Length: 624
Picture 1: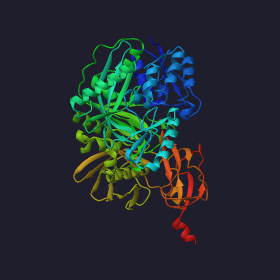
Picture 2 (picture 1 turned 180 degrees about the vertical axis):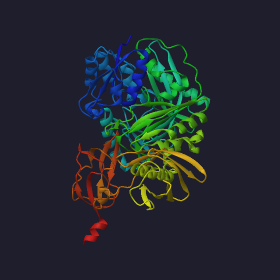
Picture 3 (picture 1 turned 135 degrees about the vertical axis):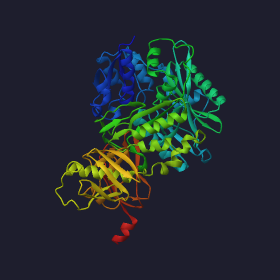
Picture 4 (picture 1 turned 60 degrees about the vertical axis):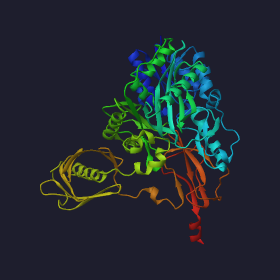
């Protein structure tokens, strides 16, 4: 029996495994990088071991350091979580060679299936080798790992070499393995997967299907179980193929077999030899704890002959610190408050934590379960809308809009191209934001002038102006100690305090909770508002043609041979930044001459840092 377990991972999945360990009476050990010294998973563990450094390659990808940490802390088992080394057969072997119990499939099964190229060969599907124009579009894909890292869609043959190089570099950084391959790219198919669980006694469970079609950058955003609207015959085929894949490699433990469904056919994608991020929806439907079952199987316990019966429907949304309207740019900074009620919340953060730049941008997974799909979707959208999330920009509004979009609610319209089709409409400003700005302005007035109805040092009848984003609010104090709003029109202040304002609009009264922070960000209910600064943002004063870092991160690559004085074309990639497990291309804004280059591989940059300057052709003409 396991007495002490180390999780070779961080954040949400480490906290998730620790929760089950506490219920089972198993002591826990965390590992942490310098950037994670105060992280929630460290605080929740019984003991923790430092991995010196911050970058994954120095810390969470160092299997030797993780094994040494387990031995130093007296652990007798290691759970890999997902990502990092979770599908690394050499790491699994190192764990067992050290006399530790590996909570996962045998290294041979990991080796057979963790490499997507070898998995496809095992399933009778060959990757593309000599790609021609007739094969387009194709997908360049990392052979190891997952989570959308090391993937590029190629639509022009001339772009293939660059995509191979970029995907390989990203895969090497994320998984320590730069192997990539090419496969046909199926446009807008449904991403459907099957959860499998096998013991060492020959029993293999298939725990239903999941639909994970809503994706951005090949990374899942909303998942659900079971996959809605799947023909029973096709579902049975997926179960059979998944069980056969597990049996073919002597699989033991939890794993997932993934397919792309299009035209009534299922195309095998890969087998993930680990727990998936989206495993909670399966747990909710089957009323089971997959982590507890992983541990029991690793300890040698047999599974019952049949899995539990499914019940109802579950939907999961991944809450990311990112801006969908700005190219999904990841966000960092203080997470002042995080609270979600009425549904399941799996997270690696708590109120007051800081979101670092080095790792994935996911803050939490929010999961709702109900008797029907429609009820589960409604519950999840409502919980997200009412959630308290104060800090960086998040995808919360996108998630709510996605769940309520007809294209999602109609299961027949699901597909991986959902955000390609609907992103513009899903990221439009929410209705009611102007009224939230009024609440922010009035709360600020109360905060700076005393309580509602208190005295004012300035002339009480003078009109005041506050601007939040694009919303200008004008108001004046009244003789009875209240406020008269002159813009926007039709808003009456009923009651105001520094943290709550009641407004009447069109005869309807609503309360707005207000939380203001030193950064100038004000959270009003579900709205995140930026107070217009008194001084001009220095980034707005940059010279024309300046390329500024859109986020804090690390310069990972500069275009081959790029040097000051080179001619560059509009849209030409100049350099690449890596931030929060994503690689971001910085391209020339227009055709011209590169007059400055301040980026070099390995350089850490803050948001707004000057990376390069391109003097455009128009600017050159003006100087002649």
